[in-house]
Length: 177
Image 1 (tube, rainbow, N blue to C red):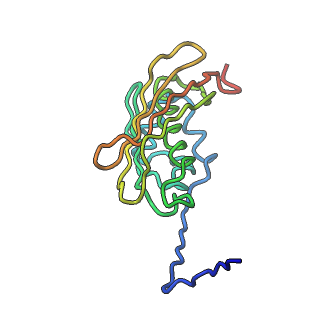
Image 2: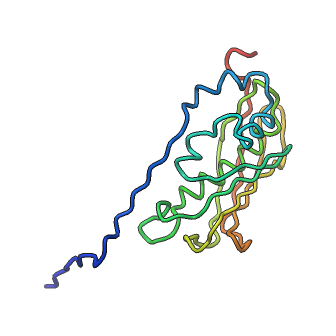
């Protein structure tokens, strides 16, 4: 019979994190009449609040142009899974954000979208040593009701960490049709 013994840490290893965000409903009246590209550019300039998920995960910024977006996020300990690497769900959220927002850059005012699927391939682990992560999303094909986009996630040294493709459903926002 073997006994396991939990070792007490020799130093305080406790971490804490606080973050703030703005009520996402506050900026909604300002979005009316703006295209997706205009909305994302206004967020990148700080004229409109970023979505709360960006604050939750610590996403740093957005660069947007027609059919393309770049989102950055520094790899941090609070993103870790039990094995000491960034959790796949965190990486998937970053990939989904980039792919879907790339589609958003192509949409006219009062048009919404939602991800129908996200197909992800993880190629290498990410840790805090990965530094600033860069996720570039691009539109592959956009139709009237669906769009196909992809996202590439790279570490600070430019190594590919993960790739994803996503199909988005495009629709008129309620009350605007």
